[in-house]
Length: 349
Ligand code: SF4
Image (cartoon, rainbow, N blue to C red; front, side, top):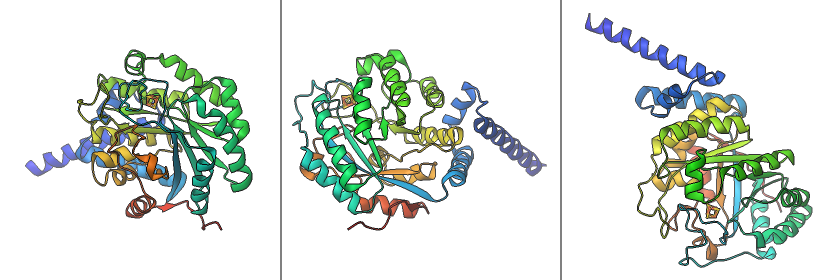
């Protein structure tokens, strides 16, 4: 009798999970159901991740996109409360790479057969001319077709110049969709960021956005709204990263973001947005050894390898100066452990 009741209960839970996943797939899911999935543990979480992997498999097979990132400058005109590159932090040494340095690292990335070059910096307008010049040279001499920029807010005209110089994708994370929280921690209005994303789409960039889970002051409802905003923005890439308290910032003593909440967010994004690119970010590895493997298991299909020259790497403290730096070996090992294959092609001479 007891066994029969238990079986019935298990069946009931299974039907409930199936029902929620179907709603998520069709997009006809309400906020309280997304909240329930964000808190998933045990069998529900296992099923969520399994469905996320199945959808990734359907659209991408076993393929993982490897990006090679160069962090070209840590100067920033903004003052985000969670980031040590904020301009009020006088404790970090600032740097900006020369055009020759950027080109030389891009060449190294190309030689390794990595298909996507990712150029990232604090919001430093002084780098714009250098970026435009080096992009033209990279396109002409290295023939890299996938060039992603992540340089922050700009005027539409500047985005246009980046596009004309050879960039084809741009990442602009919103971090939080709550306009009050955004204003409070980034000291600028969210609408400007959203406007920039719209310009980038008008200019036919591939566009990426994303959030941070566990930001001080963030609620679970905010994360639900982040997911719904990502759906509405209809971008090509989306990321979610756990909050890491960063030294020499107003948030340095705040608690770390929750790993499971981040992984559940990733899986929900995968099931809901299907063919979108989702990175397994280095902050996951910072929170837990093997964290990026968990990211792949929750539906991610991108990993970024760090090629910033050693002498500058420590100064790029976007998450933490003791951040986890992803090497090519670590990325390839993690991809293999997840049972996936990288898109790295034969080495280039
Ligand atoms: S998060 Fe970006 S914009 Fe904000 S301070 Fe850091 S580098 Fe600057």
